Image (tube, rainbow, N blue to C red):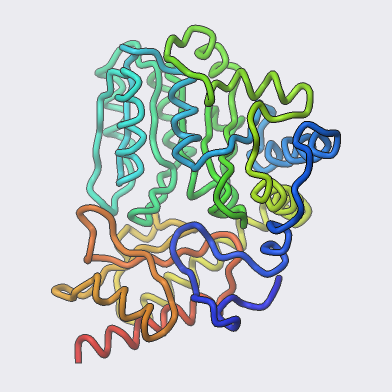
Length: 370
């Protein structure tokens, strides 16, 4: 990859997305536009679709949509849920809450099970809740809750849902896909939603979804109003090698290269690399005498949430790290504002980036507590 961003006098951006981009990717994002109705785009789209399916370990359909990750989450809901359908929403943080809000906006009869911030979903509680429900249309949840640095046990969660119901499984994998294994077919996931600005080393602008046969059957009976996010439009245009609407070409250019690079590297190697840098971050925080927010066995491999000392002004801490060290850390959200800081380590990241960020945190904490 290219020279680290910090050596170019650019901030060391360590938030959980959008991720910093190396020079070669930045140059690619600035490429001249092409005809998105022409043969060149069709060839690119074909390669990208095949590679995306490889990363997701699926034979299911896959689509690229010009939107943020929230657009992918809404795509999952609007194409499978009708007003009045029962939906079980498993919530472990801010983005799980958002997924539930989207389902409610389309008239879903949403039952929520909420777990304490910093905790993963308890499988026994999910099982018990499903046993007490009938005719559940879908179970929705966030795989990797970037607001808390917690990664749900996806394979085990899917197994429980399949054992106790015939519900669709709709997964927000915005901050996990591309960095953490998601075996769509083996685990029986119906829709996965993700976005370009996370582990995919691309700018914001493109979301991606997978769509199972079971999800297509739900689409056939869904009465939710839809147009721009109607997955049928993306399927129809895919057949002729086009997007239904003008795509975010800069993000598509970089995504094509990112997907091919992941396949060439080997997806297991990509996942292993993310685990290694995540462990380096966790070990570094521990060496500073700091505690993780989550139980280490559920700690995310794409973002680490670290507790701040009791009574410290968290907002002032983040501002001082930025001002004094040119490092941008993520803060807490909602109830965690001022209580934690987050270090993103997805996509293109080197140990030197993490070491610089943790050193900045250490020196700032010393100056604020001395």
